[in-house]
Length: 165
Image (cartoon, rainbow, N blue to C red; front, side, top):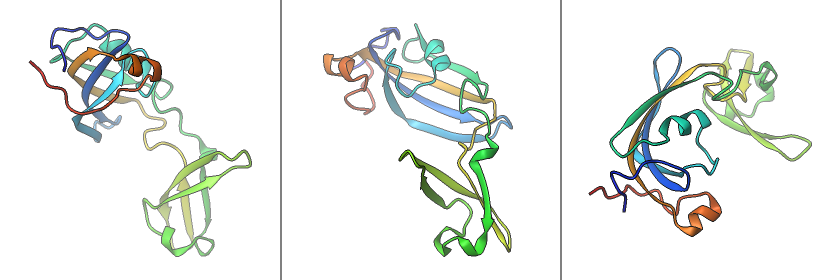
């Protein structure tokens, strides 16, 4: 259960909905179903957004713009590769296809097919919003005290929509 007057502060579970727009003001992502996070746990929420939410209560909203450095990072040319299309298995010869590669350290990264011509195919490992200033529109749906388990893990026990009263 959440308290509509409980302000957002460290060690509280916060339920938000959000919209992300790219620098062309086009919609990139929208979540009308509340998602939860533990405020101050440094898990999953950009610091600038978390700071803007500090002290807010259910029903309030914030708009936060993030530069590439604050958000999804710069666009890195070294994460884009082009190869002869004949070297690519047929199931990956479509725009948006995802392929995972593993480096010599065992780290796995997902690349997305971003361009195809008659002779070449390009994959890109950058986040789709890398290199862009993006804007988040965040609405606070609910706030409640975190449980001891949630404080220990930094993760909310559930992300179900809170009951407001």
